Length: 403
Figure 1 (tube, rainbow, N blue to C red):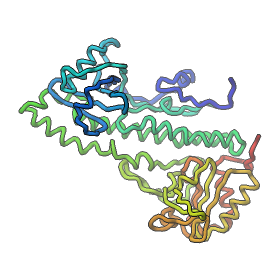
Figure 2 (cartoon, rainbow, N blue to C red; figure 1 turned 180 degrees about the horizontal axis):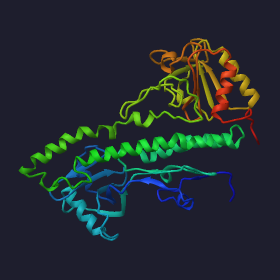
Figure 3 (spheres, rainbow, N blue to C red; figure 1 turned 120 degrees about the vertical axis):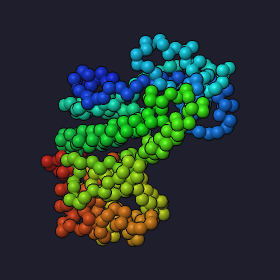
């Protein structure tokens, strides 16, 4: 098999990463967990119809987390392991006994289906591109699971990389566009790694993955101080479960973004602030098409670039039509106005949501991030748009499509 490029999405231990001798910046493991995949007809009776997603049970005999997997009375039970123990230490008999003690039911019917040991680790690859090979997903980064950013980060990696590979392979962009992949995604992985580590440390304050508490005393009278310490730690878990700003608020800085010199609008970990700052995810708003269809911004992203202009945006529409015909570039353009291609139906206005004037425009990349913003109408919209696309695509010549 021969290919122009290779995406190494081959997992945490990535053979390709090792073959290419790409190093990582990593921390020692924070600890070990054991996942037990099981079937138990009696678990539904124990939860008495309460539809919680996660059950953390703590008693004088044991502690661990249960969660249902949604079919055939199957569950996963997770508990803290011990890296120093051999592979066969946590066997079926050990796990069955532990599950029964954690559930508080000595006669619980338990069928162990699988046992997985894994470590809480943090690592980010030092290099994401090696010639024509790109690392993505777990091959590029791994985090403790507290916040759920492993898979989410991997999906965002591929959304960022895929359109750039397509543009280069079609001859619409220069190879230098692919350098922006690491420039944009590696800082996000580093931020996610740091925040997930914060989440893990805060979770340790509740007694999880920590030996600071004698959890066996939690049900005894002398456990009052322990119960109070755990209760006080619960509110500090908020950012682990409410992280919209971390998920959606990243702002890329690279050669594939045209800055406009204005200070960026930053999100916090918990709170997402929509902004059209170049590099940010385009604001998601409701729009109405001329035929009456209700759309969101995301519905307009169809694999190409998308230009949204204000009510005085006729010059931008003409510029987009010219560039589209001359360069065979996938570029959709919409004037947002009462009499335009799209009508803004959210609260406020298009100008307020996208932070532009009536003659301004925003160019959204195929991955949904803003590549260029003109707050007002420039002297020559065609030249402004052409220069923006040339910079974003690292294209020294007008992009053309190859068969």
